[in-house]
Image (cartoon, rainbow, N blue to C red; front, side, top):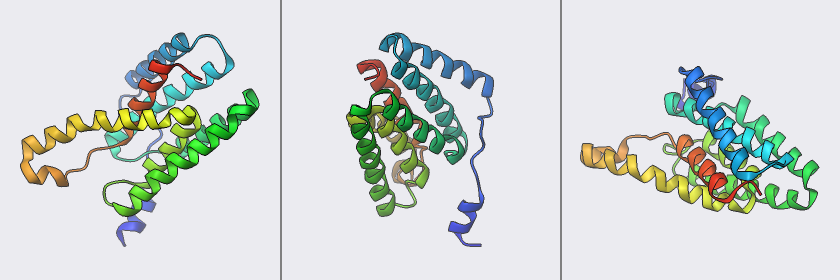
Length: 185
């Protein structure tokens, strides 16, 4: 069986090993986003999406897989909410989703062993949620990624460059940080 067939046959679990602890953190993050953003329908959507980001980030951290069965429906729900709650902002969110997903797709095409399609789909979700602020979230996420990357190189030398680090938790953290810094707009 080829590597592509094997990866297609493996599906990400729908819950992390420490589901109760993850649910607690996800709920705390959702409440923090809701409090920071203030009362509005979009704030509820952003808070729920932030909780989902914590959940899928935990799954990716454990398995190096992002569950399509969570990420893709959440993206659709966030885009539908954007259209329903603020049709004027829908175009921004849809374009940001396509741009962020496209950026990650190109990166995954250039370095297929380092980035996966799960990361591309997660970027779609981030763009749908954050609109033009997705660039801030991606920058923060990649900055967060520097810490374990530098640690890997310091600990393992050049061999550390070949070790894989799950990107999803860092992109999710960048999105949550952006929501907390800027509020849900």
